[in-house]
Image (tube, rainbow, N blue to C red; front, side, top):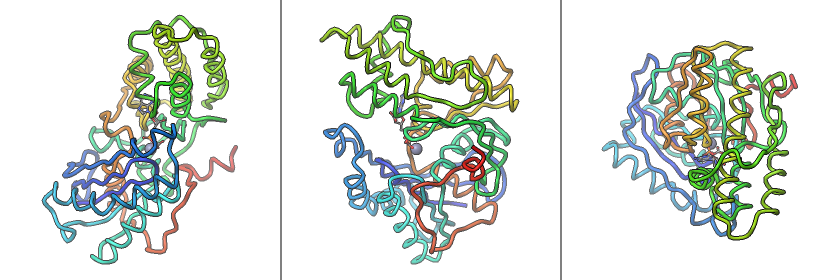
Amino acid sequence: MRVLGIETSCDETAVAIVEAPATGGPVGRILANVVYSQLTEHRRFGGVVPEIAARAHLERIDGLVMDALAEARLGLADLDGIAATGGPGLIGGVLVGVMTAKALAFAHDKPFLAINHLEGHALSARLTEDVDFPYLLLLVSGGHCQLLTVRGPDSQGGDFTRLGTTIDDAVGECFDKTAKLLGLGFPGGPAVEAAAKGGNPQRFALPRPMWRKPGCDFSFSGLKTAVRQTVEKLPAQDAQAVADLCASFQRTVGDVLADRCANALSLAPSATLVVAGGVAANVYLRGRLETLAAAHGARLVAPPIRFCTDNGAMIAWAGIERLRLGKTDGLDFRPRPRWPLDPSAAVRV
Ligand code: KG4
Ligand code: ZN
């Protein structure tokens, strides 16, 4: 089956077409994958402006769908489903993607699939790697930081159990804030990673919230504050100090993520640890998690870097997993600004 996936929940307008057998397990063929990153639209504001994002998605989406079809040398009639991120995310952007997908599905009489964006990240490892259920998932992005057990593809069917989440900020947000404070630009994650390359990771002792505490929850607000206080004391124009602070910050995040994953692997032993979401693109953090997984006799699986940040291929793949279960969504689906992966977790806390 072939599914077209649309992703518009933040600042990437992305469309992809993925092909896979109608039954079976992991690994799909990516027939097309186009991404328009709205970096230039948002850079001068130092962050994503929701209204500008929604407008930019609207301007680009039709062209990107045409580009994806051309890249795959397919017509809409050759598709078996049209998937779009249905939430969570910036609602103006989600609306653009959902309305586009619904219109295409309706006009061409194809099934419409509303995909939870986090489920897209969660299943993305299976798009390119031979990963079977169940696995432990560390989901680290701009808006989320969670540890989950994934038993199957259907988060709404109860396949996901949340072991822990952040009690304040997301880890990607912490990277973005650090970059902003240091004047490294936007988006922050790749900038901090690049600046950390020549830095001394031991120079600054930063707090490690939740480190060595029981359970699998995270906290990053104290680290954010400590970075701000350190930046205020930094000598001006000192590139080495900036590099050292980025390296120290990254090591601290690595310590915290490794510690939380170690607890999760003890509480819910798993042969596979999957890391997904934008922050999973960080090569240093991937290395730390690889070492940690090996120490627990587990294998670390991380999607290729271009499939860590937001993309349409993960939405198309989640659509394939959903279609394989025989599930589709009605054209009355309402886009959701919030949509937890484990609906029972919110009430458990
Ligand atoms: O998954 P994603 O593209 O969008 C959300 O769903 O949030 O994640 C974006 C986040 C941003 O906070 C960005 O700074 C972070 O992922 N990120 C990184 C790296 N690349 C992107 N963080 C650390 N290191 C990176 N190389
Ligand atoms: Zn994302």
